[in-house]
Image (cartoon, rainbow, N blue to C red; front, top):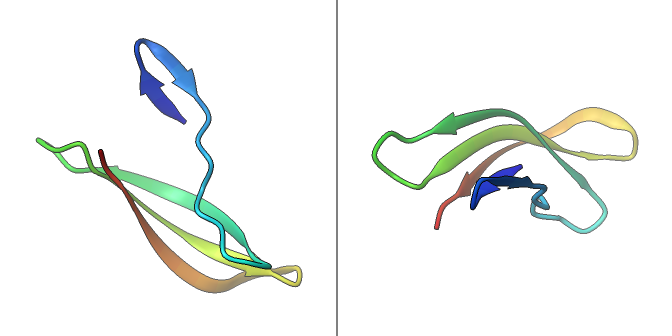
Length: 58
């Protein structure tokens, strides 16, 4: 989700072909526009096949 202009909108997570991206924990960076997330990439029905760290910034 993203807050912009007083309204929340859904955001699409980055995609890797054949895998589902899942973000679990979000962390803000004080004094910046960055948000970091930890999560995983899933494929083939396995719940935690690859860990991933995502960074969002303006």
